[in-house]
Length: 219
Image (cartoon, rainbow, N blue to C red; front, top):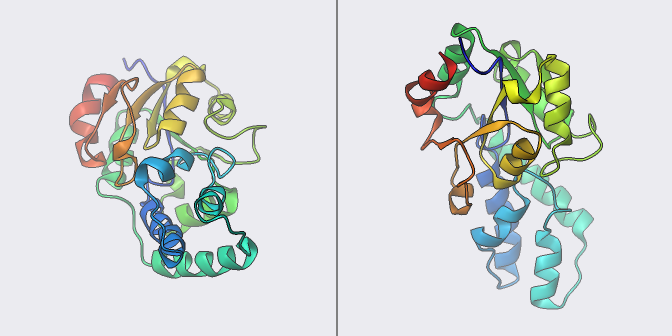
C-alpha cells in the first residue's frame, strides 16, 4: 500500500510551462534599458511572488530610474497571454496524472497563482477533472515559500500532511511543502534548473520520468 494518499501538484512550470515566456517578457524590459536579468536572480520569485524578490525593484536599482510599472505590466501581460494562447501541458503531465489515478492515489493542485489563472488553464486544457481540489492564492493567509497553501491543500483533501507527496518545479515551492511536513519530488524547468533541490526526495529530468521513478513511491 502506498505511503501517500494524495499527490499535490504545483501548477505554473510544473503542469504548464508558463514561466519561461513570462521570464522572456520581463527580460525584454531589462534589455530595452541595456540591462541583463540573470536566471540566478529571477528564479528567486518563481513559485512565490514579487514580494519574495522583485525584478521591478532590481531594475530600478540597476538603472537608478523609476518606471510606470502599471503601464509596463499591462503591456507585458497582453504579450504573455497572446504567446501562451496555444500552450499545452508539459511533456508527460497527462500521463503522470493518469498514472497517479490508476494507482488509487488522489490528486490536488496547490499554487501561488490566482484561481482565475489556474482554474481557467485547467478547464482550457481539459485537466480539471483529474483534481479533487485546487488551492490557490487567497485560500490561505500566505503563499509559498510559507507552508500555508500546502497545509490548506492537505486539509481540503482530508489527509495529514505526511500523507501528501508534492510535485514542484521551484525552490520556494519545495521549501513550502517541506515546512508543511510533506515529501517533495522536484521537476525543474528551464528557469529553475539553477535552483538547489538537494532537500527533495528525488529530482526528475521531466514528468516523462514520473511513472518510472514514482512506481517505487506510489505502489
